[in-house]
Image (cartoon, rainbow, N blue to C red; front, side, top):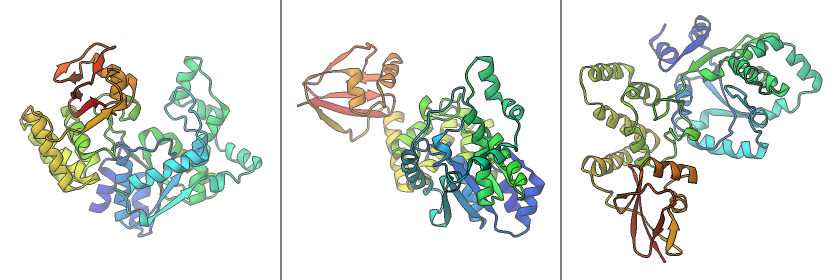
Length: 395
C-alpha cells in the first residue's frame, strides 16, 4: 500500500469495509466520489464532530470529489442510532439553517469551494409509495431487530416505531442517488453505512466502500463528547476557553486527542507517547495539544495569547489582566439567575451543579448555598469554574 494511502486508511480509522476493495479503488487513479451524510440536528460543532471532517479533508487533499450531504429530509425523521427513545423531528427550515452554520464551521477544516453540497430532500421527497416499498424489500424485519438499540428497547418495553426502520434505507438510498464510491462516518453509523452497500447492490450499482472513525471521548474521560454532557470543546469557542478546556482533560486522552484532533505527524506522536511513558510531564504535552487546537480553529497569535493568560491565571495563581464588567438593573440577584444572565453558565441546572460542586466564588469566597442572593450595590467579582471571571455591579 502506498504511503499516502496507508495514512488515509489507518490514521484515526477504526474499520475499512472492505479494505482490499478500497485500496483497489484508490490505486486505480479514479477520482472517487466520497460522501459524508449529516443530519444537522444542532448548529454548533465540537472537535469530536471534526474527527470525520479531518479525514474527509485528507481525501480532499488526495484529489477526490467530496460530497457533504445534508439530511433536510432524513433529519425530519431523526436517526434512531444508539437512541433508546425515538428522536424528536426537526422542521426542514430548522435543518437548513443549522446546515449553513455547520458549513461555516466545517470550512475551518475543509476547502468548501471544492465541496459538493447536496440535500437529500431533492430525491427522497420525490419517491412514490411504490418506490418506498421497493426500497423496503432490501432488508428483513429480523435484520433490523438484531440491532442492539432495538433489543434494549424490547427488554425495557419501549416502543419501536415503523418509520425508524426506514431511516437506514433512506441513508442507503442517498448513496444510490449520489453514486457514492466511499462513505465515511463514526462507528455508531456502521449499520447505516453498510445499508448503503446493500441498497446500491440491489439497484445495480457497485457497492460503496465504508470507512469508520472513532467517537472522541469527552473532556471528562468517560463518555462520548457531547453538548448535553458538557464535556465538549466547541469549534467556535473562544481561544481562551478552547485552551483551558484542553488543559482539563485526563492524561490518558492526550495521545488520542493528538492523533484524532490535530495535524501533528503520527511519527512525532509516537515519540511523544514514548516520552510520556518515560516520565515526561503530561502538562507539557497538554499545552502543545492546546496550542495546536487553538491554532487550527483560530490562529497562532490567538494560541500564544491563550497560553499566556492560562499560565498567568493558573500557573501563577493570578487572574486575567482584563475582566469583563457587566452592569445589571437592581441591587440584589439570586446567584443562580445571575450566573445564567451573565452567561457564566448556559443554564440554571449547570449553575446549580457548579454551586453544589464548589465551583462558584464571589470575591474569592466559595459559595455553596443554592439560594444565595448576591448584593451588587458595589462591584463584585464572580468566578465560575477555573476559567470564567466577570465583574458585576448594579445600576
